[in-house]
Length: 279
Ligand code: 6GU
Image (tube, rainbow, N blue to C red; front, side, top):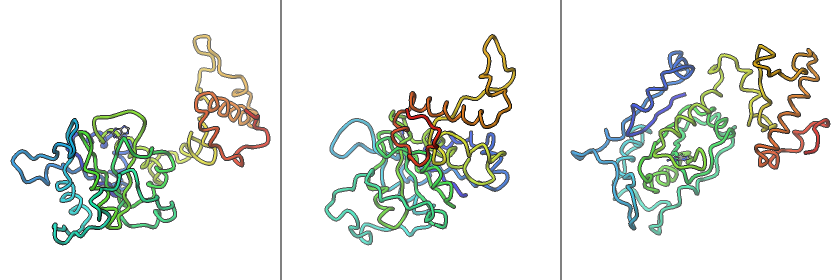
C-alpha cells in the first residue's frame, strides 16, 4: 500500500519508523511519503491559511495550495479558473463536507486502483473498524491533514466531483488542534489489517469491534495466577476449553452491556448463540 501524508508538520510522522509500522516499510509492504504542504506555496511567508469568509475566529486553509499539492500527488492536470467549469457548485454554494458520497462497498475498494483521499475532520462521520477494514484493501491512500479551524470546504468537493473517492472522518467527539493525531490513529487501525502486517494474524480475529460480534473483549490474564492476593477466575485454569469459551463469551456480553450499551443495541441477533443470556 502506498500512503501519502500532506501536513504542515511532517516531523510529526517520524514516529511511523517505529515498531511494526517501521518494519512493514522496511519489508516493502508499506510505502509512506510525508509531504510538507508549504512546499506548494509561492509567497515569501509560505502561507497556507486565510481568514474565514463570513467572519469568525481562527484561520481556514486555502484551497489553491491544497489543490496544487493534490493535483501533483494524484497526477491530475491543473485546472485554471477558465477551464474548471461549475461542476458541483453551480449555485455558488459549496456542498457541506460531511455530505460525502456513499462509500463504495469493500468489494469495490479491494479491486479499485483509484487513490482514496482522506481528510480528518471533527465534523465528519466517525471513523470505525468497518472503515478501517474497507480502507485496508486500498492500494493508495492520500491523507490531507488540516490545521487551524479546518480547510476550505470546496477542497473535498472538487476532487469528489472529479471522480475521486474522497472520505472525511472524525476519530471521536472531542476537538484536536489538527488532523495529524487523527491520521496516525487511522493509519494504525488500517495498516494492522493488511495481510502480513501483524506477526500473528490470529490476534486481529477475536478483537473488540471485529467480526459479526462487535462486542468488547473479555478480560485477559497471564501468570502468576495469584498475584498480590488477586486470583484469576478458576475456570481459566480448569483446562476445559468449552467452559473457558462460554465464560469469556458471557463476560464479553456483560461488559459490553455495562460499558457500551449502544453496541448491544446495534448487535445483529443472528450473531448471538442459543446459550447467550438475554441481557
Ligand atoms: Cl479528524 N480532527 C480534529 N481536528 N479534531 C478531531 C478529529 C479530527 N476527530 C476528533 N477530533
